[in-house]
Length: 358
Image 1 (tube, rainbow, N blue to C red):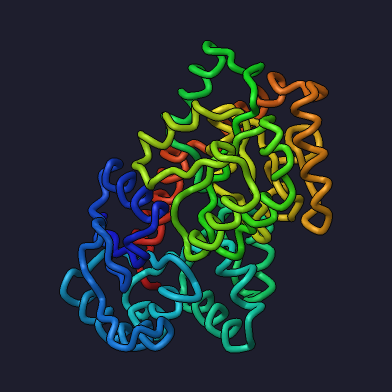
Image 2 (tube, rainbow, N blue to C red):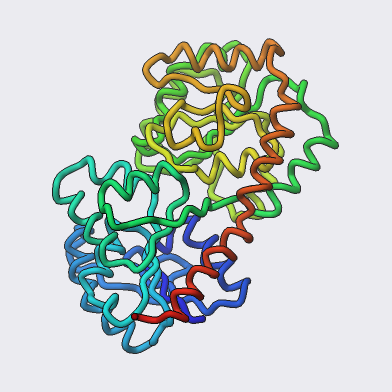
């Protein structure tokens, strides 16, 4: 099966998806405006304003479909490449499977009526839609009532599950300070400043060490705040690394932390559960399909002290961490093995291709 994927070639999720699709025997051609190492076809970006570039690139997309004759077109995500696919008209001759992202459906339509119309248009032009959570399915259906998306989480790599076994053998659960990773880039939605403002006293007391990514549009400002508020050595930053390296990197941590304002079945949370990290997450609807008060530390984004309380409980030993991480690992293994979820996606594509444009 030949798949034309439309996506950001710089995205970690794009590269994971593309690589696993190829591994499972599909021919996948990646086209996108944002060029990356994985991009096969660079779409034009004449204006530098994404919405206009999506509109202009829709003409090129029609030519690409005629030249490469894919069996199916697979845009990621609705507000950008899904919208572009709709404008191109290729859905008239080729089946279209649209993948939707949390911010794509949960955040973008809140910006303006025009954003909502773009998402609705993309949803209406796709033959089928895939989302990663039930809450996203519900949100997509509200925007476009004719849509009934398939729910397939992104999932974790096999190597992440193996890290759990290594963690149990190493048994570093009592090691202090508590080692926390926040694998969310420095963008407004991920709310990393909230974490520092809530926990800097624990950092300066030497009770916890937190490690963040070294990228994102707010990274410079964030690093400055960390230098002002936190002791040397209390905050770490890591460079981008490939999936195999990152999965091994997770073995260095006890706890996963995210203060994101918006999420839909976050892949980083699932990876942490697979690898045996204790999850500490903001209590928002997108994470509730995976965690609750029994298997995670939940905190209120309106009350910074609630995050401090969760970490204090972990430090004081009042949480049965070993039992929680074992159950979370089992949950992730039952629902979110990345290779199996890609296989489910390919099954949907094969059904669509076999039925053609009826």
